[in-house]
Length: 301
Image (tube, rainbow, N blue to C red; front, top):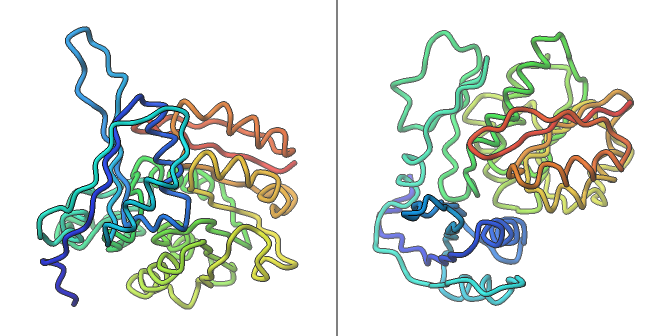
């Protein structure tokens, strides 16, 4: 196992209004060139008047040059408070994992190695995810929202024959599909980032489902991996901006009566994402918000 105890990442920290910080997080989290190892959003403490209008986003990078390039590539309408500093030596991979509690969602339980002794015995599908900093944003509310909707679909008797995990990240949703669906189901996991594809393949192996998942690097739907294919279920746990841009392509890739589970959407962006997918010809059903994140279920009539 690689020793990460001497790893000193460079932290790009930005503070500003909530709307600007969410825009910055979207840009940092989706632009492949920016190479962020992880992205976290923190709410500032409320003022004495009870207002809580500012937030902070922190992105970690391997090098100072990467952090500076990320800052230079940001295009926002207003300036933010900014800083770039190298963090002290620590096992940041382990620390990042310890900060992520298990996700409980119906028949699914997602956990890291640090919680291996506390995995419940009565949950049908337990998923070990140890992606560390490569995991990306780590927004657990979005993962839980997707898994709860998938669990509800399974409870209703749905058995999609073809599944796509778009923007797979650590591969959690593809792995959940592989565990819960019959062996005949075809599962494709794609991401614009090569490291995410590698992490998905390794996590699939650790969870005993590597033979069930085809993982591939793909930037949008123009990749040859999508040629001639349609999907009865698409997981798209990305971010609101990219989701809106991909709405027509996602709708086109859905099979008739196919369903797409959309997540990575802050509550304030839910109406705009709904509008984009409605205009793409899908029927959209909002789901309950979890920790400030909204998930949507869209169906192709």
